[in-house]
Length: 338
Image (cartoon, rainbow, N blue to C red):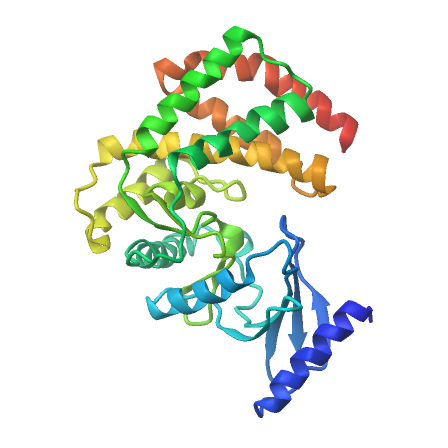
C-alpha cells in the first residue's frame, strides 16, 4: 500500500474510531478525474465510504464542504461530508456506490432514471440565492468559449485562423452570448452529466462533483445531461426530455414561463457554449496537465458542434468550416497522439 493511501486510511479510521463508528480495512482507487482530486473507496466489513485527497492549493475544499451542507439542506441528494481536514485536503464522504448513469442506463430504465435525474435537477434549480455561490457572468462565459481557439485550434491542432475565420467565430460567440445572457438564472451544477449521477438503492438519483456550482443560464444543466457525450440519445428523445423539463419548470419558481419553441434554440446555443468549452478544456488537460484520458471524447464533442451549427442558417458557415477542415485535422492529429 502506498504511503498516500495508507495515510488516508489511518486518518479515516481515527475519525471513525473517535466517533464510535466501524473502521475500514481496505482502500482502492476510483476513476481518474480532470481535477487534482483523487478518490478512493474505503471498505469495512459492513459498509464503505469515499476517501478524498483534494490538494488545498488547487482545490476549493471549503466551498465543496459548504455546498454539500447547503444542497442537502435544500433537498438535493448529494453525499454527506462525514469528516474533513482543510490543512491536508483529506475528506471522508458518504458512498453512493458504483451504479453510475453512464453504465446503468438502458432502454428499460430510461424513463425512470431520467425522471429521477430531472427531479434532482429541478431541486438544484429552485435553490435560493446564496452569496457564497458565484454568478457565472458574461465575461466568464466568453472566456470559456475562447479556450476552444486557444487550446484546441491554435495549440492542439496548430491551426491559425485567418481574419475571416476569426470573424466567423466571433459572430458565433456573439450569438451564443446574446442568448445565454437573456436566459433565466438558476443554481446550476455545471456538469450535470451521466458520470456524475448515481442510481441509488431507493431508485433516486444521487448527484456527485457539485463543487463548481454557479448561478447561471437555466439550460446549462439540461444540455449537459440530454446531450451527454457518454449516452446515445437521439434527437426525438432529447426533445421529449427537454419537454418534460420545461413542463415542470413552474416548480422552479421562475418569473417568466418557458416556451418549448424558444427553449429549443436556447438549449442548442447553450450546448454550443458547453461543447466549445469542453474542446478547449480536454486539449488543455492533455497539453498542460499531461492528462490524456479524455482525448477520445474530442471527436464526438466536435461533431455535436458541427451538427448543432448546421441546424441554423446563420451558423451554417461555421458548420461547413469545421466539417471540411477541422474534423479531418483532428483525425490526423489524434492518430499521431493515441
